[in-house]
Image (tube, rainbow, N blue to C red; front, side, top):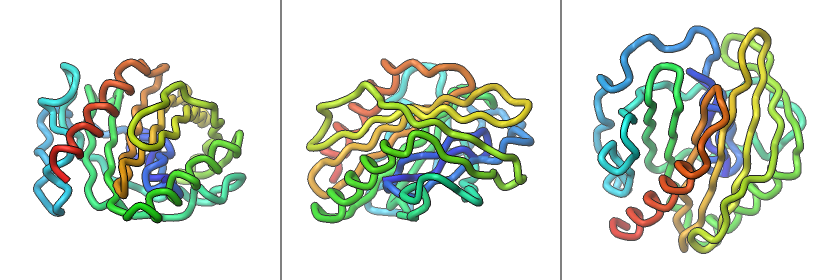
Length: 213
């Protein structure tokens, strides 16, 4: 249940897919205007189940940021097990965030349950280190999240990532199992994120998958 994460703007270590962690390059930050980015084109049967800008709070636009694998991850083995998503999309309110990354995984019930078990193991890591694609050292602390009771199973965590010369990067990481489908949302920013937005977006994502899968 780990997905991607801290790369372009430190879309911080995501728990999508429950094992794979990716960190966006901390430097340089993207310069293109976020709302101008094109919407992702359909590529999988789950594409229609992804949220769109119309489903989000005002101010979010599509964000076309690359996923960059983290390097030299130490202290949390379950963060590095790659599970590619079947569908994904990203949004932001500006080049410095906040950011939303939504990933869907069609695993079947046994695979989805295992993905949630992996997410729970990540919650035991407390802290881990890594480097972004530029070689910048990153230190992430793992804290319990506050969301629960969504879908059939919910694992919610808060990541706080620090890097030299940069403010802390905060990310709500929520993974939900709905039957054999896993929904992972990372909501991150360089200031503490609004968990009410995290919850609203996660609930909207789960509801939309139930209407489209």
